Length: 315
Image 1 (cartoon, rainbow, N blue to C red):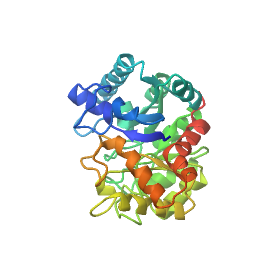
Image 2: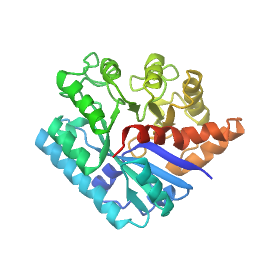
Image 3: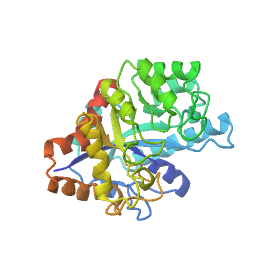
């Protein structure tokens, strides 16, 4: 009986681009309600996303509004299957009704104009996690791939503080290393890296250093296991995935690693994950066969992320 709570997918963006329906099985995609219902309990952070390159603040805010409406439309179309949730209690009520829980995030504060006013509005609309940057640097900070030495601006620090005041998860995936440490310095509540692996296992700037992961542990946060091949290492398979998990667990991460598949936001998945999110069942069985306990796997698959949501997203 496997419970799943995953910290990041770009499936709403794919619905925006392809006019797809979450309910229908999409063989070209990684996640849909057909596959989510294979699990005893399923919850998912759905990200609103767009690349800011060449787009004005006004256009990015328009795209946020468009994707938010698509998200709401999908909830309406699939109301027997899916419930919009902002808290742990709301998710548990959805599960009792036989529904999956949909949480909402924003991947890149450019979609909010890097504006405190728009952040407040997004909170009212139900957004409960925001990546301060995507791959592009912005008014808040440099990113892992652009202006990599630049940390949080004064606006970036105010933005992150306001998120914590509101009860939103500050997401440091895609952030520059300097920006990461600026977030840690001001964090009064757990923060997350929704889809980032171990840099010691795969040396990519999108992955976390040992020191960064241990800092997440210290603030009570989680790192979401990213299944994009580029962040796993050469010839990725279940063994590669396990190497990242073993490394994080060796650093005291038993209560601080979750799932963060990057579903529908990556080009390729590792060998064995061809069914997208449905392949998490195979991965679970693989890890059991390697003598990982059900208690540990329940934390990885569900409990760790739900704990952080419960601590931060209280309303």
